[in-house]
Length: 131
Length: 290
Image 1 (tube, each protein chain N blue to C red):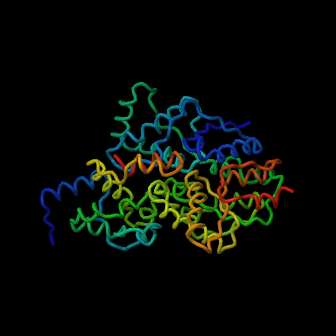
Image 2: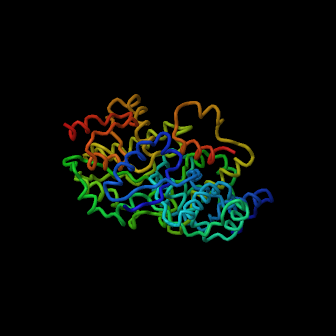
Image 3: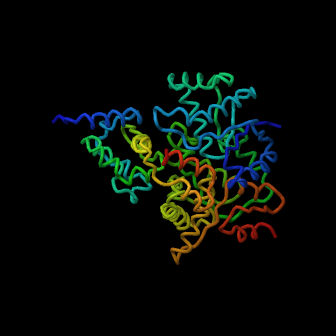
């Protein structure tokens, strides 16, 4: 079966593959990534399902998911993947597509004033979740 | 005395001071000295994973140039994140020609980076260059009877080509150190699992639930204390227990030490005066300092 994508979807696919440098079509749904993910129970879409939706051209579904903001790139998924797909990079690309439209996950000024944080946590969080 | 280039990184000067202080105290007892790099930069924290993002790696490259200028290609980090980011940016510089060209052009105010720096974690130096036999010889207060759970987290072990232990699924570098100090290393089924990392900024409850698994996993194996090498893991494992204490009536707090603090207990005469523990370590210290 050939999947025919609209121009908009074709652009999104190219963008995700370019920013991540990863080929999600190589995923064959073994589920190792989701079995290893320490945050899987907090995700609305599991890591292997992210690949499945991307393969099916359901880019918006994944872009609107909570899961891409739950991932903090611990690299457990990519380490376990028999095809060495670095899903952390795919999640980063998906977040970047939102962030580059200034769709921050949160307001920096409000969140940073909620407590004392290690410098590394603040810089990392701002870089990963905000523009 | 052996001298190593030392890269502290941002957090060892703020919430992670005790990691640095204890390492600076114990290193001379093992015949080496950590020499802080002049004019170092933030490593950029967690590495940029976007193929088209070069800017977030500039800080790391600047630091690698500072190392290059010393004439000694090795640089030692205590923070797992710094170790990992310096190693990954260095590898990208050496394998991604487009990245290298862009960075070199952008940084025309700096000497050109040659790509030869080797990022090492302090634990690698201990194991491979100082050796654990030397650590054993330097112990003045064996931590006999103390049951310690190691906690590696993510960035000492993953991605696997950057693992400080050849066995990235079942590492032993921390266990071997714990045993060298006379303590007992107990297995911790969650030792390689993420603590929640920088999610702690906007979602502390998620971090608390991950911390719960890590601490309960260690406790079920008899651990009294847990050791880590990362200032962010330490913050999460220690501070986020306060959420668990309030929310989970049967939760029993567990003290969290840096591995260097455990070394300080075994190698230094005076009782430590640590200030970074919200979960008290006094009960354990009382056992070893009469």
